[in-house]
Image 1: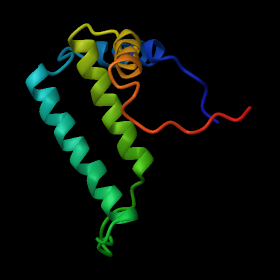
Image 2: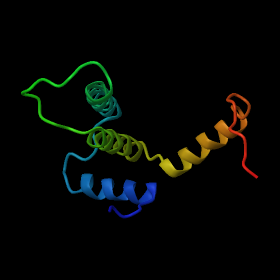
Image 3: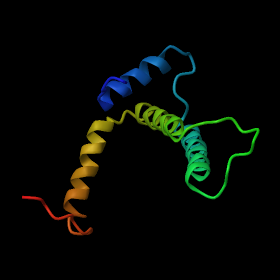
Image 4: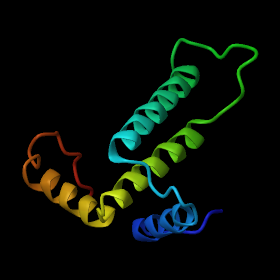
Length: 112
């Protein structure tokens, strides 16, 4: 089982990896293109596993988890390149959802 890591730890791990190369992080535009590419690969896997499009016999097996991992890596690269703390960004988003959208959805009944 994988160890539990905070988002900050994951950002540092990715930064340590990228920092060992002269090229460093790609530009935000290039990272956006990579993000789009990885999202497309995730969509393809979702379609294979849950949609109507089976894999071709010669296609390599991949998993949704692998594609989500690739997508997460690029999101972390984008955040690091733009000096964004993803834990802070996550906190801001949840605060927004818990205020702006607090009555938007039908809540489940609480068990007593």
